[in-house]
Image 1 (cartoon, rainbow, N blue to C red):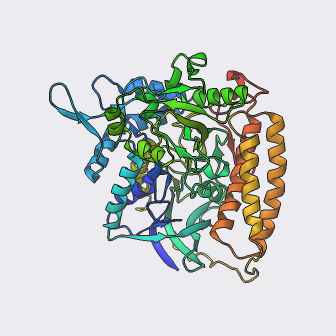
Image 2: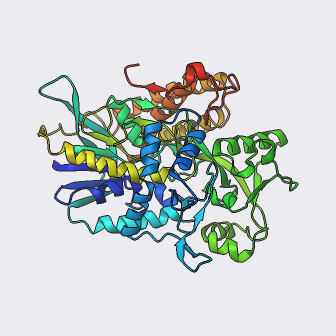
Image 3: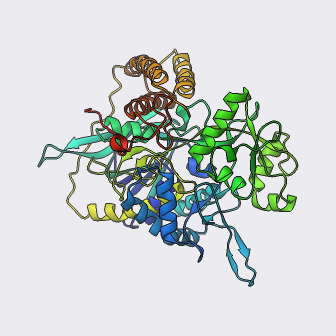
Length: 531
């Protein structure tokens, strides 16, 4: 058994930022389920929102965020995170992130800022259209240079370990069980502090912009450890993902619309102006529902995103990744519109934390998409996600450092017991359940919901969970089984939360309650294992 001061589970922007900011005298272990650079951060295209222009203001950014959040944002969290945005961007620059620049009319080099849906100003700092990759590669390189950080790649977290404090009836997180997929072995690690940076839940849906690692592991583990989970009904569907039979769902950056891209029907007609005066620059929930409405109304498989009216040189300079990606599938975005559909993209809820990433379980922090700080409310504004990662990571480090000056209970957690299980020989059960779960979530718990659809989903998820738990209790674990177990739990949490919200707000739209109910539901949906 190995002991560390801090265990970080997840290697996206949140986890890497925490590792880099922690004091160098601490002994840290960083866990990655896949390779260290495989995370949702790597695939983020648009950028990071921050007030970097003299014409913009912090108050304007706060106001835009609150509007997008549809009344559920925590004002203190929004103010704190937005106010610290510029400082954290400068920190990323110090790490070496190569953000895009331009030469102003006066000959001064400055950041090229783009504008995305929900923003009233140009405030999105970016590295062409591959910002996430630039951030991830830079931070990974820096972390690998740290002598006090141990990297464990291809280790899937199974469950958190907690123990009762000697002086009270409350519990403390003291480590985690991991599955080493390289050696097919269970590893037990003890830590004074555990940080969840495990990302989102996109793979619970059939179509998603998320990578395969986004299976809600941190949320599921925190739930089983007794933490409260909030606002799981608010799943953001990115409006524009590439639609092609040979392609996985590939996100096409919102900056395409920010720079003049138009959404059109097969006959070439624009339609967004019918749904919102902001047209293509409306918030993501509005755009996704509009596309879903038009697809169902016309019985079509997709709509199109057209930026071909812009000069070719402009497109190649600002959107090289989108150009090359679409070109692989025979689409030249400089001359032709791009077929697009919505896909599950981001979870606005998660493990309930304070602004420092602290959870209800002593010794456990959650940072990034896995957490619910109150920044996003009922709908995340574009490019506020990486902002939250880097700002809350800094706050969490300050809190962790303070915590570690206190006396800690030193324990040796019990080793993993697999004496009563055998090697599974019916893995088809895992693949079948995985496929069924993702399809029913897409069909019944998607962009537009109803009580009837949600009820059907709940019943089937309960049956699937019984089958999965039966399999889990009799057979040795694998990465696929760990992920399926977590996805089924996350699916249940989403459905239960959606059923409790008898209104439509932000990303949660239900046919049974199409209007907001400010008197009853202007509050977070908070659930825990005891309710």
